[in-house]
Length: 393
Image (cartoon, rainbow, N blue to C red; front, side, top):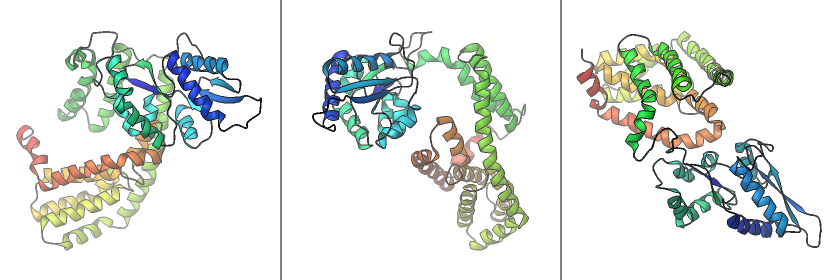
């Protein structure tokens, strides 16, 4: 599902909005001049009104303004001629760049998170349901949220439709109908986890297995990837890997320095000397892990602090599964927390956003992870129940 803000989908609505925009722009021009004011309208798709609904809407808007205004003209810039969608939105937000844009909700959600509800699967029963909602108070509320972010909202537009719930291969009336079309993808975690637990391959080798399986499914089953696209996919993967490896290299050097300075012994003496109560000692150890993982690659933190974890568990007679789960959670939460946050750099690269935008929206998720850490800390059964009942052999 993708609702497209800025231009409407019918000629009548385009006419009304063109008049509204014309009035707004005319107020900013000098009276008495005969020179036409250009409205720069852009979108990211090709300039073909027959096959591209975005360009069709842009043409309708341009033609209406041309017929009904002597002082305004619309210039359409297709194919991302004025920049990619994110750059265009940022420019409009700053009051520069193009004057108007037709864009999908996927990009808009980065600037206005409340609009992401439009992309929830199984939210709508049909197109008329969408129109009733967005033409009513809900649509008005979302429009106000968009304008609070520095944009001037014009209208909603139906574009390529309900991408999350539509398939051309089978009829979907309920969630269970999708299983025949997605079972190969759902099988991936079974193969990966099953292979690791059965000792067929290591966790590191599981990454290779996952990549090969994903390619086989995408190429032979879903046929969503072609050989022509493969070089670009490999190049994008190499770029993302290079960014991450560079960060890991710097963090690893820092970890080596701490190890060289006998940081492990310092932590053992400090943590064990804080208190005789196991919970306080573990809390202090988790705080150290969280802090270090914010600056050092997670594997390096584990290598440095494993002797500390073992010593704390031996001294206080703690469950090694519980203590190990706490250590892994703390280190991974630290790895997703700025300023270094290797995981956030990966997410930023995949999403095509900026690092500061990623940080802004990751904070609620970090809070949720910290809440999970507290649950495991105070309720050991949350970490030990599954291993005790299913992995005891």
